[in-house]
Amino acid sequence: MVTPSNIVYSAAALRRMCGLLYRRVTELQVREWWSVVWVWIPGYRPSFAPKRAFKRHFVQWRRQMAKALRVVLWATDAQRYTVHNEAKGSSYVVEVSPTAVTCTCEDYQNQIKFWGKGCCKHGYAVLGHLGFSSLNDYLNDGPQSPPVPVPLAA
Image 1 (cartoon, helix red, strand yellow):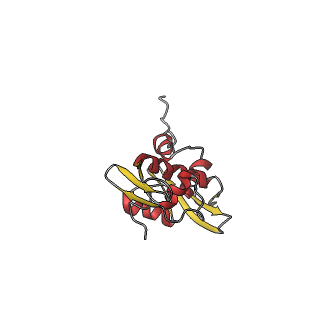
Image 2 (image 1 turned 135 degrees about the horizontal axis):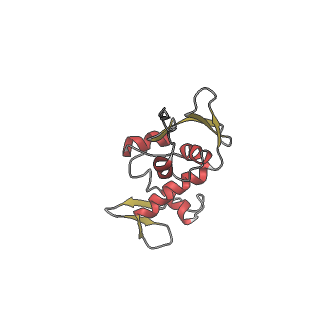
Image 3 (image 1 turned 90 degrees about the vertical axis):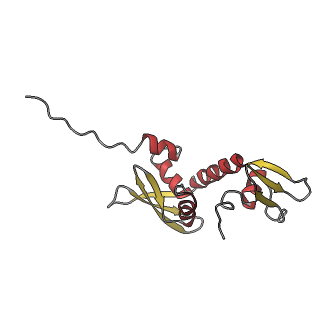
């Protein structure tokens, strides 16, 4: 079951962050504390990791995974895209608006449920397709509304 804590501070994230092979290390543990994360990897002393490292990895992992996805603009709606994951054979619909990038995938739905905002790898794929490197860049710099024409004085 996905929780607000284990979506970011997970054993899978720790494995990726430390470059550990899944087969070799199966018993590692991750526990969220007040401002740090307690981590234990078999063969090493337990230690603490800053939460910001896990949060940074949360975003960077999704951005990295987005690079392998194919983005297709809907012909009938300029704000909707279908994002295909050829490796998994899955597709999700992503919609862009001036205030958000929404997706039909479970990861995005969990982020909305827990934090009220978010961006999944499908959203990052669309942002990259549109020329933005981050969700903040998109929300701050685009999409811009076309200027309203002002009539010339006669």
